[in-house]
Length: 169
Image (tube, rainbow, N blue to C red):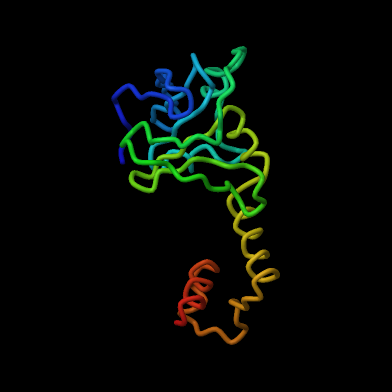
C-alpha cells in the first residue's frame, strides 16, 4: 500500500495521528503525537528506519518532550489504513519487542519507544539476518549451507537456501 494521505486514527488509543514528513526518505510517517506516541508505518516504510545508520531525527523531534498516555497492549488493534485486525509479532528472533502488523496491507504499528529499541537490537539487517541463521542452525538443526553447492546455488541468499531446504527442493 502506498503512503496514505488520509488522516489516520491511532490503533492503540484512538487519537488522530499527525503526518510527519521525512524529507530524506520522501515519506509521511503517521505518529500519535497527542495520545500514546505510537508510530504507524505504511507498507515498506519501516525498512527505511529500522537500522542504526538511518536518519530518524524528524520522528524523534515529533515525539520528544511529550507525556504520552498509557495504553492496554493486550487489546486487539485494527489497522488505521485498511481496518484489518493486526497481528502481534516479535521484531526479531530475540523476542523482546512485540509489534503490531497488518497482513492485509503490510502496515506496522509500534508503541512509543519501540522504534528506538528495535534499532538498538542490531546494528544492521545483516546482523539481524545472521542471528536468525544462527537460531535456525543451532536450535532447529537445519543444515542449509552445503560445501558442495552448485554454481547456481551459490548465488542464492542463505534465506532462500533455508526456504528451499524446508520445502524439500
